[in-house]
Image (cartoon, rainbow, N blue to C red):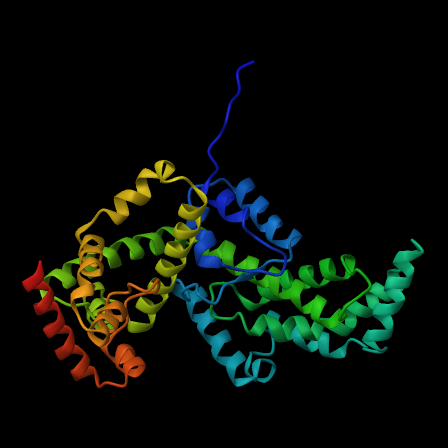
Length: 351
């Protein structure tokens, strides 16, 4: 009988290492699912829910779009931060009308006792509609409170509240009758809010932009390394890429997560099975230079070897700026740059 084997997709490889309670970067998920169909995306999000893996959207760039929607998104974010959504919105604004209606809903009962009643009804397989309704009414204001934290991320607040309410209901249905109900409820609300932000980012093509940003970062970093004879600072890379230092920090974080994932994968696979595309990335002057420096460090004293290791990211992390290196070694940024230049000069003499 002929046997067929299928290579796992990047997402499948990442999902195989997930454990209950983990956090998963939304930007990484976007790049892993780039080009996949909607069914695969829904399956991936379902996998995160089934394993209670938190979808973390904190590293996604904020997006507003353009036109009236962008203006509304920015205004909602500002008002949410100021805490005056209800009073600042126009009287006939749909969001204000909803918030006024929510404020008029009678809220009664103790949420802990109601959660216990729900658990008991579930154990007896009895109808729990009144208890579920009471839990919803007690928690809708919490949905709004959490939804406000996600403003400015491409999704209007009315849509966030709707998605958060769906998460609340799912949390009530999935209540296992143990642990802290409010923490359980909040996790489900946040997960649905994060899904809404993630899907909006995906529809806006942010995954492709993030991947391009990582590729551009490598190119600019390699070029500046060659031109300057040292690691470029974050600010120097930001100027070349016409981005802010904060945006570059996000790109660096994604690159580090990608490298960490590749290191784990390489440790699990025989060397002969190393993917060609990973090898192609590593086989550049950028990485060759770092490898050559690693080989030559033995000729330096311990202090200079440590300095270059930090500056060139040879200890498993990202390359550090002169400021960050100086903080670790007790040096000024100027001293770091001077000692780096001297150490590299010494290495060139050994090369």
